[in-house]
Amino acid sequence: MIERYSTEKMQALWSTKARYQRWLDVEIAIVWGWVEAGVVPTEAAQVIEEKARVDVDRIRQIEETARHDVAAFVQSIEEAVGPEAGKWVHFGITSSDVLDTALALQLVEALEIIDEQALVPLLQILRKRAFEYRDVLSMGRTHGIHAEPTSLGLLFAGWYEELSRHRTRLQNARRAIAVGQVSGPVGSYASVPPQVEEEAMRRLGLEVADFSTQIISRDRHASLVCDLAILGSTIEKIATEIRHRARTEVAEFAEAFFEGQKGSSAMPHKKNPVLSENLTGLARLLRSYTIPALENVALWHERDISHSSVERVILPDATAIADFALRRLRGVLENLVVDEEALRDNLATSGGRHHSQFVLLKLIKAGYSREDAYALVQRAAFEAEGGDESFLEIARQSCDVNLEEGADPLRQVDRIFARIFNGDDDR
Image (cartoon, rainbow, N blue to C red; front, side, top):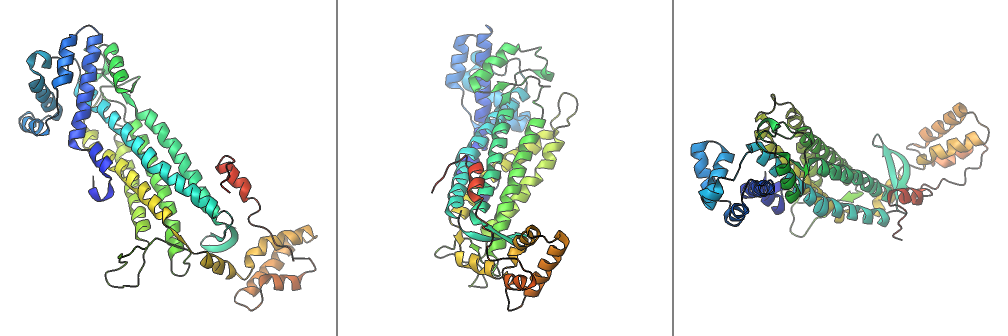
C-alpha cells in the first residue's frame, strides 16, 4: 500500500497489527463456539479473552524459525495466556478458518469506509452541482464535436446516477464478502462441528459460508475487485471530462488553484488539471487488479496458497485506492471552477448550426421529404461554417417555412431530474 494514495484509516485497517488483531478476534470467537459446544471450559475462554494480546515483534521472532505466520501467531497467543488455556486456541481448526474469516472482517470494514466516508459525500456534492447548474446551457458534444445544447446540470446528474449504481454494487459486494468459515481441514467439519462455526460467526457479525473447501471460494473476492475496477472506470470518465473541458481551447472548467500552488517547475503561468490526471492513473491501477483476482479463483483441489501473496497486495491496495480516489474526486468537484462565460462563448461559436435537427424536423412537418430536408439543412450548415451569416439566416433563405421559434434544450430537464433524484427539488 502506497502512503501517498491511501488515507490514515485504510492504512490502519490493513496494517500488520490490525491483521493480527482480526485473527485474534476470530480465534476468540471460535473458542466461545467450542464453549457453546460443551468442549472448552468457560473459564479457559475467559482467560484467553482477557489475556490474549497481539505482539507483532514476538510473532515475527517465532516466524523466523517456524516459517509459518499463523503457527507463529498461535504460539504467541498460547504464550500470553498460558498452557492450560492456550491449548484451546486454534483447537480443531486450520489456518484458513482464521485467515479467510479475518479477511472478511477487514473487507467489510473497508467497504463501510468507502461507502460512508468517500462515496456518500461524493454523491452529495454531485447532487448539489446538478441542481446548481440545472438551468445553465452547455454545448453537448459527440465525437468531440459540437452537437446540441444541453443542461450543464445534467452532466453532474448523470454522474450522480452512475455512481449511485456503483453504491448499490458495493453494498451487494459487502453482503457477498461478509461470510466466514470454521470448517477445518478440507472443509469437511471432521474436526470441528458446524455449531462452533455458527456461534463464531454470530459473534463476529458474519454469515456462515454455505460451502468451503478449507477456504472461501475466491469468486467472491474476484467479484469485489471487478466492482472496484468498474468504479475506477467511472472515476476516470468524470476525470477525463474535466480534463477535456479544462483545455485552453475550451476553458469551461478548471481545477481550483490555491495560494502558493505551482503548476509547473519551468512555466510559472501553468494551471494544470493534475488531480484529474492523477485520478485517471489510479483508475488504471484499479483495473489492473482484476486479472490476478480472477486468476485466484482456480486453485488446486481443496486449496493451495497461490492466491495468498496476490491478495496481500491487491485487496488492501484496491480498497485503499478506491477510497482515496473517491475522496480526491469529491475535492475536485467541490472546488471546481465553472466559467459560465466560456460556456456561452463556446455555444455561440457554432453560429447556430446546433439548430440543425430543429430545422430538419420543422421542414419534415411542413411537407418536405426527409431526404430533401436533410440536404437543404446540411447545405445551409456547411455554408454557415466560417461565413458571416448564421445558419438560421441561410436556412430561412432556402425554404418557405417559419423558423423563428427555436427548440428549448431545457424543456425536459425537470423530468430527467425527477427520475434521478426521485422527485426531489432543491429549488
